[in-house]
Image (cartoon, rainbow, N blue to C red; front, side, top):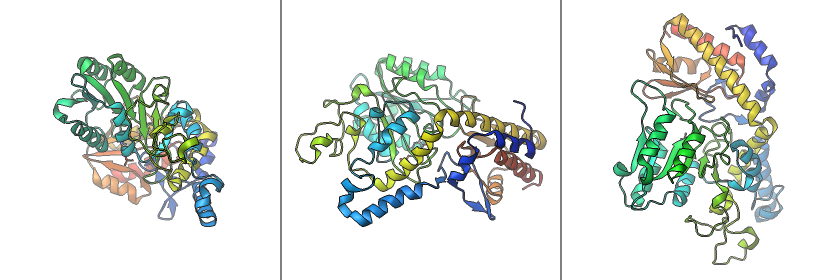
Amino acid sequence: MQFKNSLEFAQQLDAEDKLYNYRNEFNFPKINGKPVIYFTGNSLGLQPKRTKNYVDEVMTDWGNLGVEGHFYAQKPWWDYHEKLAAPLAKVVGAKPEEVSVMNTLTVNLHLLLVSFYRPTKKRYKIICEEKAFPSDQYILKSQVRVHGLNAKDTIVTIKKRSGEHAWRTEDVIAKINEVGEELALVLIGGVNYYNGQVFNMEAITKAGKNVGAYVGWDLAHGVGNVDLKLHDWNVDFAAWCSYKYMNSGPGNASGVFINEQYLGKEDIPRFEGWWGTKKETRFLMKPEFEPMPNADAWQLSNPPVLSVAPYLASLTLFEEVGMKALIEKRDKIVAYLEFILKEVDAVVESTFEIITPKDRGCQLSVLLHGEGKSLFNYLMENGVVIDWREPNVIRLAPAPFYCSYEDMYRFGQILRKGIQGGL
Ligand SMILES: *Cc1c(COP(=O)(O)O)cnc(C)c1O
């Protein structure tokens, strides 16, 4: 499609957009009395209006029922989390039994590594991407220490080639084959938080499993953003948070995927708690742990209902729209944003560069050659919510659920004016 940098054209794209009205399902912050252009759905998704009803329902039931709410609330609390598995499984390409919701992301990755990082004398190394998200780096280093190993000899990072902004799949696979029989685990952020790159999860999973390693994915930036087929790709495990593209609110509950081949097993190492044992016998309070037949075996505690409720609210939106339609709009709106950025760049003469590769989801990362922080501040003051990553990158994620083509056009106008006016 031939794009045009005009208000009329942007509005025409909005008129043709089947998801356009979903904007009205979300609450937008305002700056100078006007709804913002929100580019930070990759950091904290906007609040769906329906979420308040889900939370209010729990509050009302708690007020009216007290402890009885566990079994008699409108949505009983004791198995509230089970309602999320089926819709969430569709989002990540899994069977419902392979998916569970619990804790938060970093906690879940640690719990999953109890099961999937079991170094032996011969097979103990971990492969991850260089400059992984800090929490992931801390997870791996501290796990390695718990096993009495040291990070330097154990964690192998995949580097980008010099002068390049993205990782190459062939380099990841070559490294996996090189480490070979010493490789215990591959754990990578499936969509990189910094450059927005989508890794070839299928090929990398295959390569890792071929050499006998476990392969897991941190999908914080992947879930609700890109097409995932965790089951078909034969991924061992994955985890993600729910507050980025999943719009479930700050610090909210995390989802996990555990391949069905590990379900219903008593012999897999796992940190266990009473919500992981079979629900039929749970309240007999027996000393023996009998794992739930699904990913819920990894549940430790009774579900944090006030945190799971917003996630359920958000999933109803994903159920209505489906990943296919979201991805279709995502590709078009990101392409339009890229077009707008290039138009501005041509006028202001190369003050920035898009470093996100073609394998991308919703995010464009823009490396600024000049203005830096002052441009960031100018945009924020003018109603454009973006984020900043050191040393000189702004990240723009036009989430397809609630961003419009007109937003992209208006953003281009604000950006050009700012740069031309010397900010
Ligand atoms: C956002 C993000 C996290 C955040 O972890 P929390 O435990 O939810 O604070 C972790 N890893 C990656 C790759 C992320 O993008």
